[in-house]
Image 1 (tube, rainbow, N blue to C red):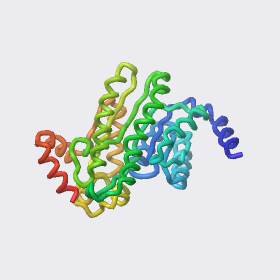
Image 2: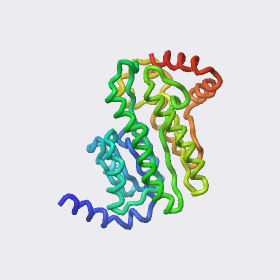
Image 3: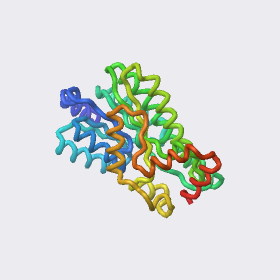
Image 4: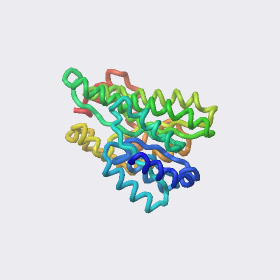
Length: 274
């Protein structure tokens, strides 16, 4: 009965789904992801929102549907599960919803010395930060290509440019995202598909609470608002930039870091993460 109701709902809204472009956003219930949902909604995109918190997603759907007159679909998934990206793709194919813009935003940090952190937590984090963006991008790219073009926004970090003692796996995952984004952006340039990596520094979200890093130096000073970070990422995406670092301080950190030896960069990063 639930499937029948869902199918009926989609069929009734078919015209609305077809008359607008659709953006799929993971980690859409809070932080940068939530701010991006508002930006896409204000610019007339239909939305597919993915996160674990069903209550928050439903509230966002209700608010944005009413305020912006768009169609919003909620998919409750835990992206630390390896089958989640396939289930998201299959559900949208079944409902006939075409994704024009993919935003791989979901993420969190496991903090601590590598010798002391739990392997299972780091593997789950890699599922969210690396596996899910890779699989979702692979699955949706063919459809986006057939539709004549589209856009992908991947969320990296200023940690994408540096080693990160005390969060070694997280920084390495974000380095993958930046490299991956630039590589496929070059491959897809001839297909009218652009790829942008948004690489923020510290941002005022629940990210620090979940990672248990609220008391770190890097979590207390120079934090940007999630709204400003999302706005910077959205503008870069629409301008077809390959990557963007929000905020002057973050740009300085990235630029000066590139000039320093790896050992020095690791020591500085460790000081910030201590």
